[in-house]
Image (cartoon, rainbow, N blue to C red):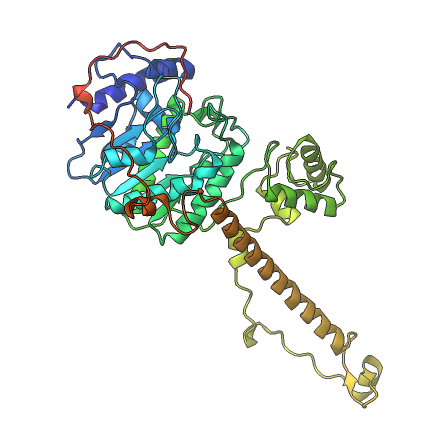
Length: 453
C-alpha cells in the first residue's frame, strides 16, 4: 500500500510553511502536489508498525483534521484504522457536510469495520449529536465494541472552554450539549468497570487556542500534532493497564450561554454573598450573571476578574469541592499528638477559675460542657446534611439520564439490546473498506469550502 508516512510529510510540510488557514484548506482539498492524496469519505488503514498493537480511531470532523492534514505523527507506532468524517453523528443519521455527502454514523462505521478495530477503540465524536441521543450514542458504541471483542473504548471528552463557538449545521448541538455529553460520558465510564474510559481532552486543551480553528473544536496543523500525541500517549497508558478516566468530571468553566443547575447554584451562591443578580437564580448565564460574577471576583481580590466561573471562583462560592481535598484524612488523634496536660491548679485557684454547680461539681475552664456538646452536634448535623445533599444530587442525575432515553427503548435497555433481541431491525451494512493505494485521484475540491463538524 502507499506509505502513509509520505502523505504525512507532504501535508506536514505545507502546514509548517504556510499559515494555518491555508494549510487547512489545502489539506481538505486535493493536495495535488503529492500523489498520496486522501479524498473525503475514505477510511485509512496503516499496517506498517510490525508487531505493534492494532487500534481503531473513529470520529467526526474534529478528528478528521488528522486525515485532512495527513499527519499521523505518534499514531504510526501502532497499526491503526482511521475513519473520521465531516458532519458525522454517533447514533443518529449524519448530516450532509459541506464536502457534499452524508457519511455513515459512528456505530455503522464500526459495523463496516467489524474485526478491524483492534485492541483499543478511540472515539472523538459527539459535536454533531443532539442532546436527546447522547444515551443511545454512548450505549450503542460500547455495546457494539463489546460484541466485536474490542478490549477497551477510550472516548475523548468534548471541549467546553470559553473559546468554543460551534454548533452543528442543523443547530442541534452547542456548548451546553457538550457539557451534558461529558457528564454522561463520565457517569457511563464509572459504571463500566474500566471498559469505557474518558481521555480528558477538554481539560488537556484548555487555553491552547492555537490548536483550534475559530470555532474552538476543529484542529489546526499544530492541533493535529497535539491531538495525535495525546491519543497515542493515552493508548500507551490503557494498554499498560491504567485507567485514564479522572476520578470524577472536572469543573467546567461557566461562561455566558450556559444553562442548567450549576448556573442556578452559582446564582444562588452569589445572592447569598450579597451580590445582586438581575433576574434572580433562573439557571441562565446571561450578561447580568456575568456582571455579578465579575463583581464577586473583584470584591474577593484574589480572583482573576473575568466574569466566567472558573474552578477557583466555584470553590470560593461553595458550588464545587476539590475531590482530592474532600478525601484527605483528618489528622490522627494519637497520644503522641496530644499536648501534655497542664498541672492542676491549687484548690484556691480552682475556686476562682471554675464554677460550682448546683450539684457541687466544678467545671474547669471558661466554657460549660453543654456548649461543647452543642457544637459537636451541630458539626455532625452539618456533615450529615452535606452527605445527604451529595447523594440526592447523584440520584437526581441518574433520574435525569434515564428520563432522556429514546422513546423507542425501554428504560433499562439500549438500542443494541433491542436489535439483538429482534425488536428493532438491524442497521444497514455499508460497502466494504478501500485501502488508500486503491484510491483514484480525486476531483478538485473547492478550497473555499470549509468542512463542518
